[in-house]
Length: 267
View 1: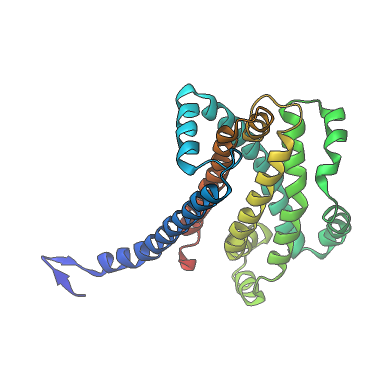
View 2 (view 1 turned 45 degrees about the vertical axis):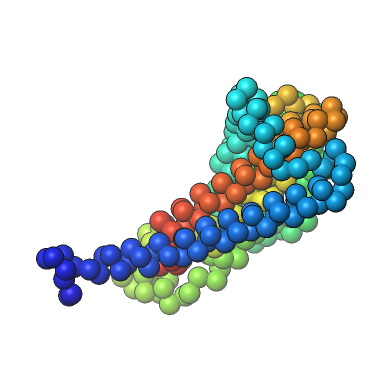
């Protein structure tokens, strides 16, 4: 192995290879944001109306809201709802989907519910959910979890069913039982697609969150946006929109980092 000053240079080369794609991705995001901000500023100049303020005015108002703690309060409320929705909706559905994809009996039970529940527009049940669960966080979290449950269940069932059977046969030949087969074959083979499904569900849950927070809410980015809109405080409204977008981008970034750690063979 080549050495320099008594140290192998292979780890350095590997590190550079790992960092380069990340830098390219970050550079692409920065360029895309710059283009969007430029387009926004040009559109604001062309329209010349208060309902489309300049980016700098929105950033100034976002800074003011951040200093007063209002922006942090609303962001924390939204993040709390997303966290519990994923914990109670996505992950149980993903586990059930992985199991259903490998079991014909379980799939025969699960599939009819998927085909009934998945096409339904879940948001129309919000008034009914609030009647049963009240106007607090419980009803909002239930709606979010309900929305992504069938989505994650369907995606992970199909992913599990497509796992290469040669891997399964090899594990069985070495004496792996169902539990070992799941944790050492099915789950690792499905992890990249699980991360993809999580990204899709994050987009869905963020969109539904906005609607949920416009009903009987006192905190949350959706509430902040609609409240600012009704007060004709357009810079505050855009500050809320930008913060919700940044929150979604942050969550996507966390999933990307988790995928790089859990699925190094995909890098």
